[in-house]
Amino acid sequence: MDLKELYRDVILDHNKRPRNFGRLAPPAHFAHGHNPLCGDQLTVYATVDGEVVRDVAFEGSGCAISVASASLMTEAVKGRSRAEVERLYATVHELLTRADAPVTAELGKLAALSGVREFPARVKCASLCWHTLHAALAGTAAPVTTE
Image (cartoon, rainbow, N blue to C red):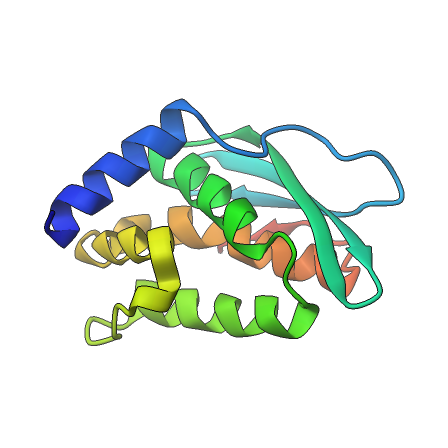
């Protein structure tokens, strides 16, 4: 399967059947995110035990890329340390914004997000959940926006 097929199949699957969709009960960390350009809105919740993200979920609405990216993100960060999540955040940001960013096997299904690079207007759709998770883990109270 080539990367374009992977992109299409994974995005469609995670949009139709988002993983970890819903709210986590307090004392979960949370942040709200909004992409005013296309109307994507979501809230990301994370339960942190020491330095480990034990659980993560999201709720909201958005385009297929936004929902799929949030679903993929929740699967990828659950059980990782804050430091690992920060490194993954930086790797995905690079994957979305740099045409020459490597697509490595360690990305797993997140590699499908590399297809977003071909649609620069959609990068904000794919990155909104990552910025929102970053804010939730940092305890930022102000809503996250892609503008």
